[in-house]
Image (cartoon, rainbow, N blue to C red):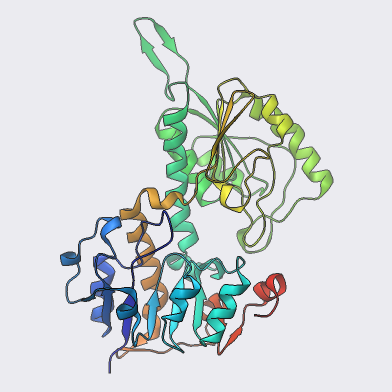
Length: 375
C-alpha cells in the first residue's frame, strides 16, 4: 500500500498559502505517494483543482485526513484539526513550536510525529529545506513594497522640469534573509539604503547589495547563524549610534528576530520622538512583539506623526510564489525519506532528529521542552 499524503485547506485567518503546489504534487506522486486533497485547498494561492493531476479531491478536512499517513500544512493546526488526524500519523509544517503547550499536548495525545520546520538545523545540507528563509525572502520583499507605497516621498531620485527630487532614505534593521531582501528591493526601487545588524558577518552582505553598513561597534554573532541577545551595556552602545541613523531616515524597516523568543526591542519611544515628521516604520517583527516599542501587531499607529505599521503574515500577501517555495522546502525535506512509496524516517539523520517536535506521545525537542515544559 502506497503512502497516503493529505492536504487540507488552511483555516487560520489571513492564511492564503498552501503546502502543496501542482509541481510538487507531481514529484510526490512520482515517488509513489497517493495524494488526498481537500477541494479548493490551493484556490487562495491561485492553484485550481484541475492544475493538480492524479490527485484525489475530497469535500472536507475529515475526508482529507482519513487514514492519512503524512499530513502537510502551512500554519499550525487547531486542536479540532488535530483531533481529525489519524493516530500515529506524521505532520510537518510551520508549527510555531514555542507558542502553545495545549497544541503540543493534543499532538502527543494522538501520538502524532510532528516536524516543525522552524527547528530545522542551520546546516548547508538543509538550505533547500529552509522554510524560514524562503518565507523570509517573501516577507522582506513585501516590506520594501509596503514602505514604498506608504512613504511620503519618491524612493528614486527624479529629475523633473520643476527640479531634482532627492531619493528617500531607508534604514533596514536586521540583515538576515528578510532584511537582505528588503535592502535589495528598496535599492531596486531607487532609495538610498543603510542597514544594520548586530552580527559582524552581515557587513559584507549588506555592502554587496549596495547599501551602507551602520557600524555601532557592537557585535553579537550567535550559534547557528542567529544573533545572540545583547547585554545591557551593548544595548546602550547600539542605541546611541542607531538613534542618529533612525532620526535621519524617511523609512525604517525592522526585521530582527530571535527564534522562540520575544523580538528584541530596538527602537524606543524616545527614538520615535526624534524621527522626521511623516517618517514610517515597517516592523516585520510585529508577530513576536515588534522591534519598536510602539508597534501594535496587525495595526497601523501614529506617534509624533511617525507611522508605525505592524504587518502580520507577510508571505501570505504573495501566496503563489510563497506557496511554491514552501512546497519545495517540504518536498526537499521529505523526498529522501520516501522509498518505494513508503515513508521511512531515518532518526540518525540530524535533519530529521533536529526538526522533530513530537514523537511517540512526547515532546522531543530539548529547547521547546525547556521553554514550555513537558506536554
